[in-house]
Length: 204
Image (cartoon, rainbow, N blue to C red; front, side, top):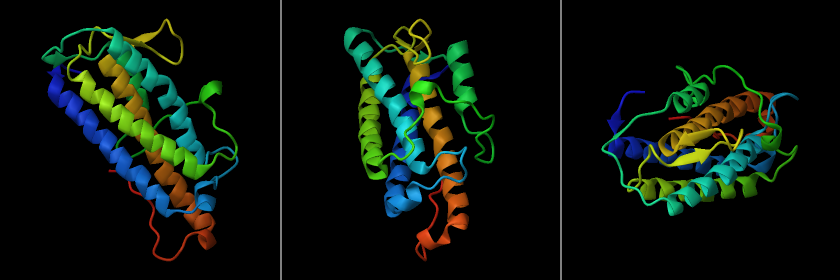
């Protein structure tokens, strides 16, 4: 990733989070049965995907918040991604045509329950997204390069703050493509649960 204007970089991330909030709100139009359907035994339901994202958010959001409160830094005019942050983000980003790309096995600690409460998980996710928006706003006055966040893989493996935001948001975008695909498959398999006129949430 080349050097980018820091303000424009953060604004682009804010737009992505706002888009995600819109998309997850559309899931409230589906009943809990639909959101709990798995396309097959190996694939997660929508509710499971949202809970998986909540597990990540509940690690990274407090970690980012703590670091922002500890560091008294000033923003740089340009942001440059680190090689590791760039690598992790590209692994997660949806590919052309809204494809997930290479499948990856989730960490054991991030595997969702078999039957999570869909409505509860959606509410928690939306709360997390609003908190993420607040942190992005705070980050406009911080140095995205020098503040480093321990990854959930290992506390000794860290990413700079800008890359942490990029990775976390790319991870969410990846899984919202999965959600779209899941709803498309389950709508064909279980038409009795989909009321006439319902539509599958689209990924912008």
